[in-house]
Image 1 (cartoon, rainbow, N blue to C red):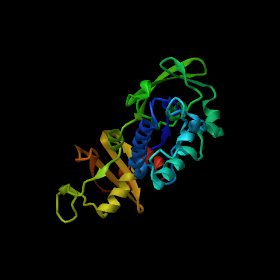
Image 2 (cartoon, helix red, strand yellow; image 1 turned 180 degrees about the horizontal axis):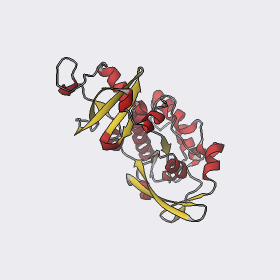
Image 3 (tube, rainbow, N blue to C red; image 1 turned 90 degrees about the vertical axis):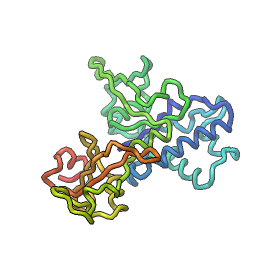
Image 4 (tube, one colour; image 1 turned 60 degrees about the vertical axis):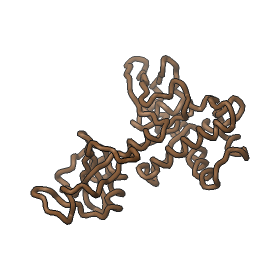
Length: 260
């Protein structure tokens, strides 16, 4: 999954530094939730102008980081600084700029072509917005793309503003699903051959497929995971899984997993 920070949601909505602290801690917890599924080599992308956007009517994000009253611990500050202020910046990536130069992007009839949102749409990513941002408060946002001033397309992008929304996209392995329990014998059921910890790692790096299935390539094997139509007590969707043959994995999934 690719994640993008919506700088247009930083509109000075906090009425005090205290409120700004609350908003920033909420977005911190969202980043923490998605950290495992994001992966080490998949940075959260952002616009280079993000640091200059406002949390309150007078306080920019950059100024907030240097404010002694922001109530962050050292580790929290370092974590947020790395995600929110360090490169890569999507508006400086030439390959992306070239692909989108003939596109115009609209939201509620406003031109937002110079923001991070067109790239989010193009790469089918997930947007992360600051809470209480008015038109960016919805979990699903409709964006209009106009290509070469002719072809108009409406696209829906997933927008995270709250912790429970982030948890719903973070799958959890259920070791108690008995059908694939390696200690039991079920007819036509392949037992899971990974430890619970490794099964969770495999699930974290999996690719979603139709019918709420997920595929993963872990320790030189393919694994299929099925959504159980349930959520645990913290709101995470639960999955069970098992190893599958190479021939059972769709080719487009292999390409996404970089296995050819």
